Each structure stands twice: as C-alpha cells, then as structure tokens.
Image (tube, rainbow, N blue to C red; front, side, top):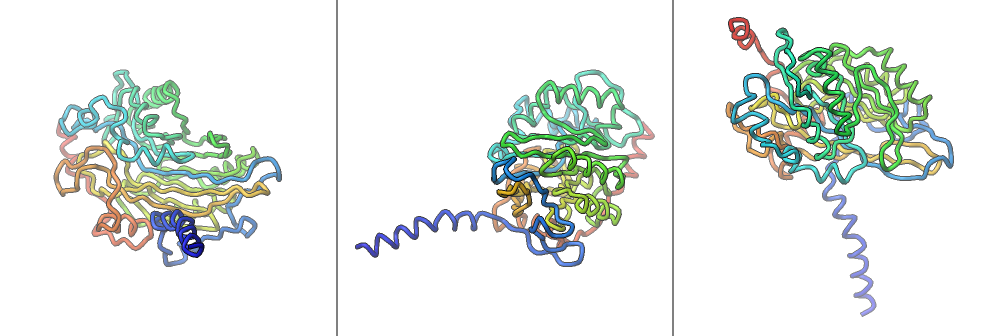
Length: 384
C-alpha cells in the first residue's frame, strides 16, 4: 500500500510539469548564420543580459507578449461597409480581443503597433497617402479592454495619413484612455506593474530607423537604469518575407549595445524570429486586429511570449520563447472573400495553419511571391 501511495504521489507531482511541456510551443532551431543559437549567459560577449545592482530588485520571472498591427479602422473604401471594422465591432470594445484576451491579462506586459489615427475631429487626409485609417478616439478602449500595455505610434499611417494634427489627436486619445505609447525617436523608461524596469525605444524615420541614433538610445536607457531594453522599429518592405540587410544590421547593433528584445512591424506578414546573443529579434509581427483589409493576403499571425528571468544578482535575461499561432480572423480564410472579422483567433494545434505560422517564424517558409502591386488601385484613385 505504501508503494502504491508513493507512485500516485510521483504521478501527481509530474503531471503539472508534463502539462507545461506539452502546451509550450518552442521555436525550431533556424539554420544559417543569421539565426544563431540563443546564448543565455548574461556575461558572454554581446549578450543582452542587463547587469543590475545586487540586492536592488527581487529575483523573479516575467512574461512579455508581442502582437502585430492594431489598425482599428477600415480604409476609406470600407468605412461604411457591412464588412468594415465599425460594423463588425458594433460598439463592443472587447470584441476584437475576445478570443485572445486571456493571454494578455495573464502576462506582465503586452506590446503592439498602433497603426491608425484616433480622432473625433474632421481631419483632411493626405491625398498622397495610399490608404487612410482614422478611428474614433474612444476606440483606444479596444486596447485597454484587450490587455495591451504599450503601443508604438512610430509608423507611416499614424504620422502621414492625417498629418501632425491627426498624430496629436491620437496622443491625446491614448492619454485620455490610459494607454502608454511611444513616439518616433522617443526613448523612455516604463515600469511594469510587476516591477520590471523596461527601457523602450521607438523609431520609424520613413521605414529606415537610424542605426547610430538607435544605439545611442539603447545606451541612454542603460544609463538611466533600464533592466530590460526593448526597441520597436517600423521598417522593411510591405508583404516581403525576405529581410533587408540594413534591418538585420540595425537589430544586431542594438543587441550588441544592450537591447534584449527587438520588435518589428510594417511588412503585414509574419517574418522570421532570430535569436542573437541572448536577445530575441522579431523582424515582423504581421497583422493583429487589422482593419486595413477585409481580405488580408496573409491571415497568419501569432502571439509571441518571451519569458524573462531576473537573477539574485539583479541581472535580467531571456529564458525562452513561446508561440501561439493565430489567424487575424475568427472566420476561416477563403481567398478573395471578405473573411476578416478583425477578431484574432488561435489556430488548432497540429493543424496545417498552425504549422504554417511556425514555418513563417522559424525561417523555413517559402513564399509564392513577395510584395504587392498597387498600380491598379493608384490608377483608379487618380481618375476619381
């Protein structure tokens, strides 16, 4: 009887561990020099582990979540359409994150790219902008209802669609509804509710963030006492899976200077995750709740969660990366249909879609084509 009780006890102790291992989705080890293995030693050359002062902070573990573009409005062609963002949301701020909010209320810090203007004013859009995205100011509550803790506003649609006045309206809306944010070229200290001191730098610079400025910002944040430094860049080329050498060099330079996480946006599709000297580089997080299209070219998206450890000596480093593959819509993807309902939904584990997301993030994905031709759209606009 005693032996049976011992066996039962062992099973009960091992079950939670087994469940964690089963549920955790680890990145495949990418091939090629650009996807170096993780170096988790904070004392190694080039490591992103930030050395703290012994005794200044308690040891602990933190979970940071990253998601893609939050464009909380449809473009001018679908503002009043039954397929548009407003119609789908129907006044329910919780709707866009209703299938995923559980991941963001349970973590320590969630980041996203806010790629639209928030304003109740009748602003004039820039005619030269390809598409315009303007949502009511109170749509900032979509972010708070969804558990988003910080957004970058350093992107082309926020800064160019409705000019400086539209950008200022957006900053005021975010402040009114309590959404922390970063501007183009801004470096700031942000402390999570759980006590992790983050240094956050945001940059756009017409899709070409300046490397020297970024490195200087990382060094500045280190000097200001940031335990963990995050760079949020709007860069690259739309709907291209292949990375630009300049973006890779920028990301590596920031990590070498002390950054622990690089977050990229603009491509509107998932791009590879690189693990470099202990840091995590998310080159392109794709779309999230994306009003930019009723039928996005790529429905694949993901929640990427980074587990961060603070050691007893105060040093902070990345432990591992977990992925929750998702679709941008709760409706199934059907080509050339208005399938997007702007409510991201996790894919079923083991499905083809689930595997496709992982392939996009581990670097093994083979796109059928890269980029998109908007010449027909421009021709129609010029004739109107």
